[in-house]
Length: 130
Length: 65
Image (cartoon, rainbow over all chains, first blue to last red):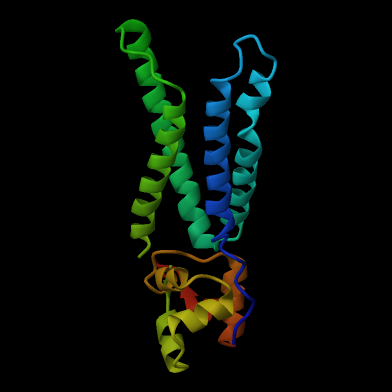
């Protein structure tokens, strides 16, 4: 009665590419400390982790497209809510930073905020359909 | 939308997982459809109708109707 085989869940490629991204980021950070400030090698070193990051985007997109319609709806709602949370937070904090003298935050926190809010919203929305 | 998917599935003694595999969706999706929490797309509705050898409107009906 089976209609079609399930597509692979990217069980290995996702942790592999995440590990590769972490490793290139770590290596770039270590190598940067040995390269002089005015060296032209700083840019390729800094941009090196973008290659595995692009792979991460491709794998994540393929993973989402392979999900069934309910999971795709869950992810779409989660992504939208996550975007709205991030916009609200960054706008509010931007105002606090410029007008109230709050400390400047590194932009990498925005990526973390998107990921955390996406995962949390996804779990909440998924519970609605149980 | 209301539906009689659970009854149809029970008649054939299929598990949610078996039906999900036949439809090409997850078990969670079949469960959500049965509970009326999720309305499937037209392609899935047509596959359901074909599986149970009936029309879509024999399985699904509007809440108001």
